[in-house]
Image (cartoon, rainbow, N blue to C red; front, side, top):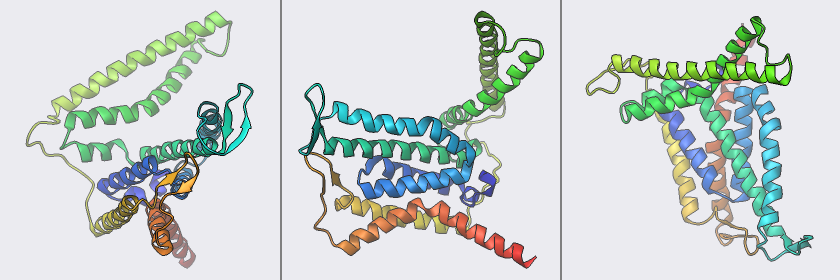
Amino acid sequence: MADRDAFFGFHPLVNMLYFIAVIGFSMFFMHPVNLIISLICALVYAVYLSRKRFVRMGLIFMLPMLLMAVALNPLFNHQGATILVYLPNGNPLTLESTMFGIAAAVMLITVISWFSCFNAVMTSDKFVYIMGRIMPAMSLILSMTLRFVPLFVSQIKVVSSAQKGIGRNVKSGNILQRAKHGIRILSIIVTWSLENAIETADSMKSRGYGLPGRTAFSVFRFDKRDASAIVFILLCAIAIIIGAALEIFRFRYFPTISHIASDQHVLWTIMLFVAHFALCAFPIILNIKEDIIWKNIESKI
């Protein structure tokens, strides 16, 4: 779905700067409003990018992880002044620890969702383009790491189909036969992975990758649209950082739940939350705008 994403077509520097900002803010802000804004925007954008695949991943992995984090924190963290009930072992279950567990779980799911979007938008060629001149060896390793899992999964399907064609199906036979066939497939995949890594390293070395003065062709061009996007991202990020410096985004969970900066001007607080929303919803707004333009063009045909 990345080819339908308007934000995907921006310069890699814009993509990287955006994800550094939203992921960084999602990891450090525990204010409920910030968490809700970032979570909703991350989920909407991730669903737009991967549709059914992200929904399936959310139901299988993220929802159980969310419930587990919410349930485990109050069992081990008994801080807080508002006691809801006493557990059978005598420890109190407090409102503050429960709310903190919910906030921590939401932050975890939010960061995972943003990284899912990052993986869809920041392809390996974009990553190598940005980091290649600064850290060529590290950028190559990270690029190979990011693309390893999808390649590994696709190659497993190919090898499994080939083994199935010669009667080595992991879903048929007794337990020993299934294990034997599975180990054989795993051995083939590991060998293929090692050979592929060596071939990639030798290929890049023979092309002079990382040597001083080496030029490289690139399809990415920085234009006015990218400059405007960077200015917008930086303005939103600066406003958010100012809000953090003024402790507007600071929220206390222990010993009692309280908004630290409750004495700040309400309008100023709302404007800073709007800036955070504008930053997180930037790709969504772009896609809505592009969809409207496209539908208008189709209606005129």
